[in-house]
Every structure is written in C-alpha cells, then in structure tokens.
Length: 113
Length: 113
Image (cartoon, rainbow over all chains, first blue to last red; front, side, top):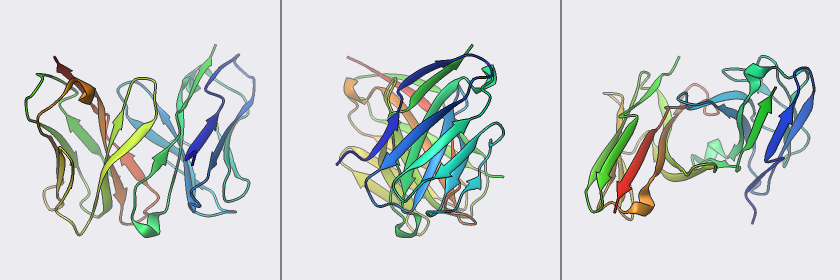
C-alpha cells in the first residue's frame, strides 16, 4: 500500500519553462490536493479536487493549472515557471465525508532559476 | 478567512520532559483539526485528528485537545524522546468547505539527549 506517490522528487527549471507534477493515490479517496510549502509560511492550498472531474481554486492558484485525470491521479502544471514558484510541493488525499485523516506524499522540491 | 497560528515557532527541551504545543485559529466553524509531524525533507504524517464534536484524542504519548469556543488546540507530548524531534503542524478543516484545510506555520521541536 503506497499511499500517495509524487513524481519527481526534485526538479530545476529555467524561468519560462513548463512542467507537470504527477500525483497518484491508492486509497480510493475522493478528494485530492496540491499544496506548496515555503519557509516560515506553513502549507498553502493551490488547488483541490473534491471528486473525479471537478477542480477548485485554493488560496494561491495563480500560475498553476490542474487535471484530475481519474480518481487516482491529480496533476499540477506550471505553464511558464517563475522564480516565485520555487517551493516544495505536496500532494495529499483524503475522504472528507468520513472525517478521517489526510495523507501526504513525500514532496517535490522545485527550484526555478 | 481562517488564520491558524502556532506558538512557539521553535522549542528545545531536554529528554524526558513533558511539553505542550499550541495552535490557535480565528474561525470556530471547523469540521476537524489535525496535528501532523514533518521530519526534515519529508512529507507530513498525521498524528491525531479531532472531529469538531470531540474534545480530545489520544495516541500513545500524545494527547490533543480542542476548545472550539476559544479557538485553541494543544498537543501534549509526554516523556519526550530525541526521536520526537521534528516540526509539528496544526491544520484546521473548515465547516463551510471540508476540503479547505488551513495550516499553521509549525513548531520546530528539538529534544536533547
């Protein structure tokens, strides 16, 4: 049981390049999330998907797009990376209706130069 | 907008000491509150989840309490060990949208042998 799996673990991009972060969960959770973590600021929600086929903006959505490909997979795309998007990105999943814990991936450390 | 604050930002204690970590939130309309542990360079691991109707949860040496009316939660760690050294994060799920989980910036705990 792998839980939440993110790829890649590390990435360096040049300003203006694009990339997609992949996330998959094997817990049959309806909800999936993308967060970014910056020093001293905790985690901030970028986008979430409450069910397959739906996505919603979180606290800091600008510069990002997401796709809920199926129930298992939720990807985050940076179309034109900026240095301000240098951060650690976490994917998570949960089953809010069951009022149980959220599970997080190991994170992707992204540097934009 | 829900604001989550954790004080102190960092804490250093000798091994064996009992300690309390604090979390405060501004909007009492919460669905649940979770405490997470994060080791350096790793993802988040859920420690305890308190539903809005509950007052506390216990797991081993950990006890988390919730006082919605005052907007506070505490995480009590008994008989601390060096292996408890990590960052502890508090996260609050909104009652208006149970996919909207807001995090505090965390308390970095060091337990000295």
